Amino acid sequence: MMRAELDGVICSGARRGGQFTYALLDERAPRAKPLGREEALAELTRRYFASHGPATLRDYVWWSGLTVKDARAGVEAAGAALQEHLLDDRSYWSARTSPFRAGPSSTYLLPNYDEYLVAYCDREALVMPHRRGLSGPRASDVLSNSVVIDGVVTGTWTKAARPGGVRVKVVPHARLTPAGGRAVKAAADRYGKFLDLPVDVSSVTA
Image (cartoon, rainbow, N blue to C red; front, side, top):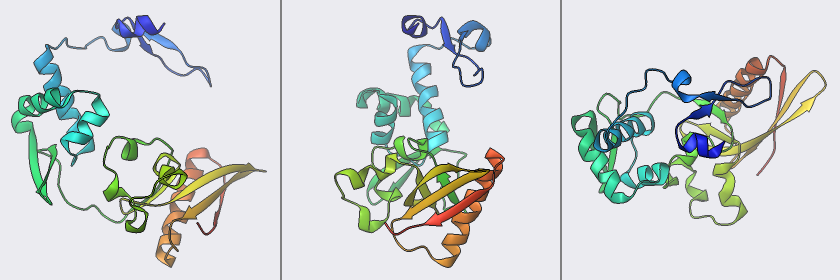
């Protein structure tokens, strides 16, 4: 099955309950357009920076598995579709149509291995200042279920079933402000709405 996937014969299909399935690639993506190597590099590069930018070339190499040479060629081939931003003498790239500015205040409970974290090689800007440079188990929080407030990982969270609902336990990296606590509760409520179950939220010290 793996060989058939690598040869482009099959791909992942729709779930059947909890069961994974396969589907013929020609049926799943009937209008796929074959691309030459340079065109494929340009398209992959454009899509990465459109969905993950601003990001560095190093981030793109990490995410794509391309060599630095091919990643640079992709940026060059994407041409006017991308725009470069300099911050602290470092180049960041994004799609030309993507705004390079801070968004509105927002809070999310993200799952482990979420693209927001694992799609970047350098995650320093995503963690709280006092946690930068940590090593060992505590540094793996970015690969845990993460609490993200205004773009920064401010804690972790776990869930446990309870009679008639779900209990969410939040472990913040620093004491939450009253506004932060309300925002986390609202994010948990959205999660409960998705599950169609009531959610209780508890917060403990890291």
